[in-house]
Image (cartoon, rainbow, N blue to C red; front, side, top):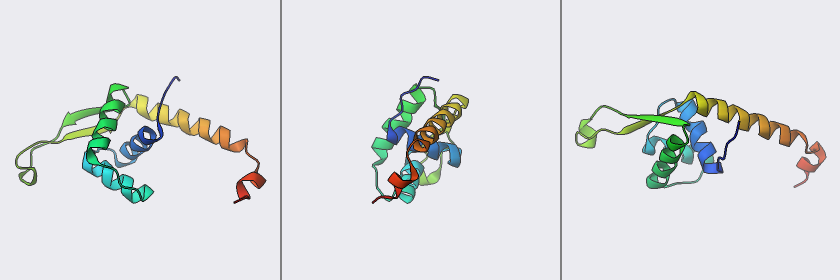
Length: 108
């Protein structure tokens, strides 16, 4: 499988996979929770659109809500292609990590 994923794209795709349905704010909050680093919602929106353009996510409009002034939000879900790609990424990472001797990993 041919892919080109940056670290942030990979992280956002993983978040979309385990949360099932995401939007910009939910990804930003989960990203902060998991990494301890904040990221702007506009940056997340850029990544979500990029992943959708690569066919790794699909989106649709959610229902309007009073909290959002009647506006709807765009919701994203991982595609089968996204799931298959992240499996390949995981397999590649495990293969590479297995090549590093444990003694090297134990050194500070």
